[in-house]
Image 1 (cartoon, rainbow, N blue to C red):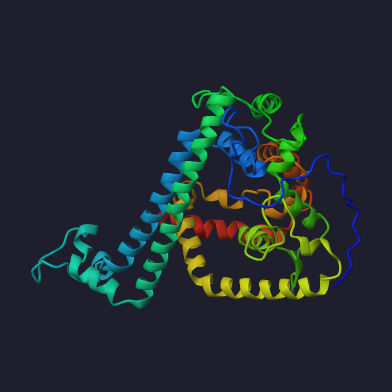
Image 2: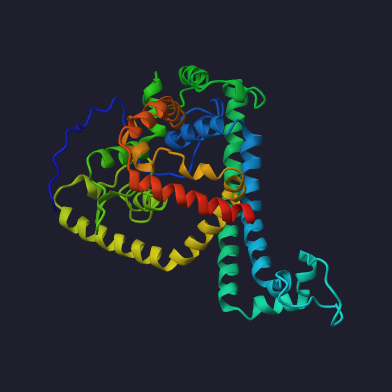
Length: 391
């Protein structure tokens, strides 16, 4: 296996992480007289949920967001199925006389209700299409998975809500108006009083950020050291940097939290990865795991592609119709956000820093104009805007 030289060095730990065991237990009460926040087993997950609830502006906002995500999935699948199977487009586009209209009778205007198929016809078309049945079954399984995850998250975040109200003394009504620095200050005070972490009495802001961003820091390091393949040679285009959300998800699945990943839990590396003697065998296992993940992506690619197209259409169709010029707006790429990210930099801190640099970065990019790309982009925006305006 290739040797990688790196400037990163292992720092001596000021405390020992909780040993393996009881990984799914979030809070452990050691004594009936102790506070319920004494000796939290999984501090990484606990601090991450505290931060996420703060960024989602409270329990109710988080709950509504999760509910609407479930409703959106049902709406997209139902509405798409309806458009594909329950509308007679020959009638809608006046290629055929609507049902119930006598021959020779003039049709003034055809509306959508005139083109709707009867319910039994619609059901039969869905039932007789193996592709549609497969898509609906896959969507149903995925929705049930999301529903179970939603119920689990509600139970977990209810506990975090109790921590905010009882330990930090911050109600959900005032949480949106509290900065993360204030929340951190109160968490450090609770640590000194109730010992959430028993290995170190006085935590710092850096300790909290490090536990929230443990996996994110690994991804930032691997990208900065070019350990992840994100640069590809394409014909005519040369070297291209490509890092999509799907590709990043697969990297995290393989290396960080998926089956057979490097970590035993959210904070502990597996023992075999700490020994150099089994490096060749681990590399072979990693190669096989990447192969299986690639095959799974290949099988699911059609469904994922259709879902992304439909979701993008429903999400951005109205915006592009009203503002076609938004197609040409610049934004930070996922690779750029990851490459420019500092270690232990939280999401809201990164967003604030990149927002401050947006104007300067835009001026810098304007200094390297591409006339050919400008001509192509201008005409693409024209055609897309015209089509969306008609729709």
